[in-house]
Image (cartoon, rainbow, N blue to C red; front, side):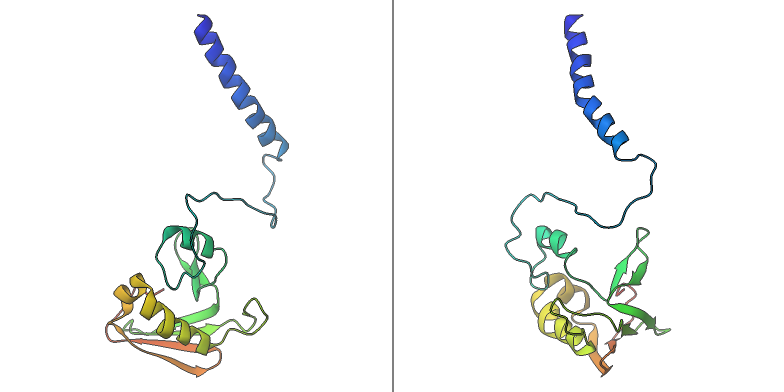
Length: 162
């Protein structure tokens, strides 16, 4: 009987602070934008260039640092990120992205279609094994008709590109 009481007492000591913190944090209030979050990872990522590695720790961190042409919402639907809009040809072989005019690098320089082309041709397709395996032999070319438009032309339909 004493052991069972000690177990319940230990559980109460553990759960009471959690309940107090939960109540004090404004349970039922709307979320507030901003602030910080601390996330533990299991190992040192070794680098912060997601274009040259498929290591999970790198992508866990870099997902919060770098942007892609599109992001995904919680239902995994593509949503604008660096591209404010895009079109997919009816045959799913041509993807045209229009870059957001306000997209800039950390130093304030604008992100251009040439930067996107360079990233794919000179980094991702050469050094990132998943990109190379998934689109390498299918991507015909990347066109940059103007600084805010980038066009990916595929040999065969590629519905998974977004």
